[in-house]
Length: 418
Image 1 (cartoon, rainbow, N blue to C red):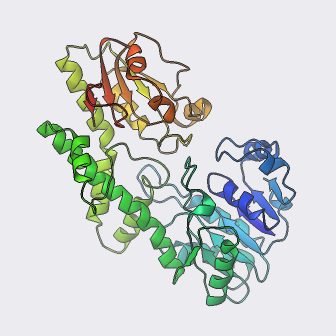
Image 2: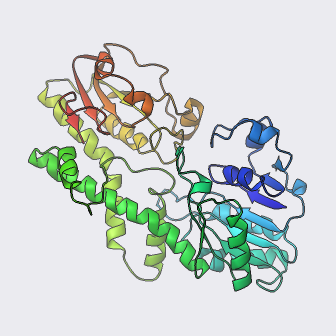
Image 3: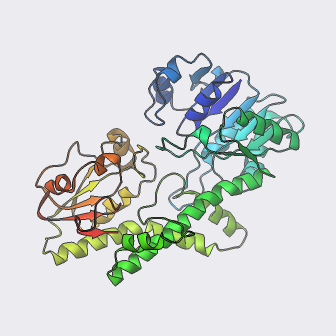
């Protein structure tokens, strides 16, 4: 029996995949989530109904007492940051305490949540030992296998992405690696230690954050120079070793969060991670840069600011994905409202109720025609890409400004590009 703690974007697909080979119990504190899953409804991960309700090897519960005796426990809870961008380990600590009360001898506890190096050994294992009365590597073992799920990606699925594994002892490392090998078609990579596996995951997202920050800074400079950034990137891409990125809003639960974890740990050790901090500051500043560029263009076009209406197309943190966690479109909305602009947001993929609950923003059902003074293409959903530029412009008034953040249309068809 395998127990998966946390049934979000990571935990549910993992539970479903393991249920093809093992009996699995999925646990989540959210009772509404469990009720929906028992009815075969999954609005988060897109798991099909028949994989949930007709699966005799998979059960769901929100009741701790209903968790059966098991050998393997996998923890996939969220590890966010607080308002000061300090790592919030509340959920993973609570999960460790809970699992500590459940595990028996020979149990294996595996963490998948993204953390800074040392969290599993310095924070989680002591809690497991304290609340179980058991001793690590004598009575039970622990591993770390970072999640690599890419929400909304239909090509790179859980089973087709190589999995990093690790264990608290050579025998547990082998057991955990063999366990994941049963479900991961792309294969596994056994890291030399738990800390290495933790660091590998956080490094992946810091590298991407830093690379995007560089392109964002270049786009700011090229805007000042009157050069089209996309033209520059297309030219630079003709060299074989150029790494291709595009400027834009950097949000989500990974790239927009994980760098803070390593930065926090580095500062605890007395080192200031200047590049990581600068990259975060630069990427977080893009909503204000975008809004200021729009305001400049509106002034040039003699469009009154305070009486104007802006339409933003897209709210999720990435294209063709319903995930709204840490969406920087929210920051863009807030920045535009500082100029007293009236802002409508249209996103046919985002869950309007979730957006209202998380951000107190009401999505519109459909854009009005001949209504807006500016339109911002903020997320590159396939739905938006299927619309002609004429359709997009029909939402705007005669002198409407179209600001394309995602290079959906040719530069001759829009008024501003990032």
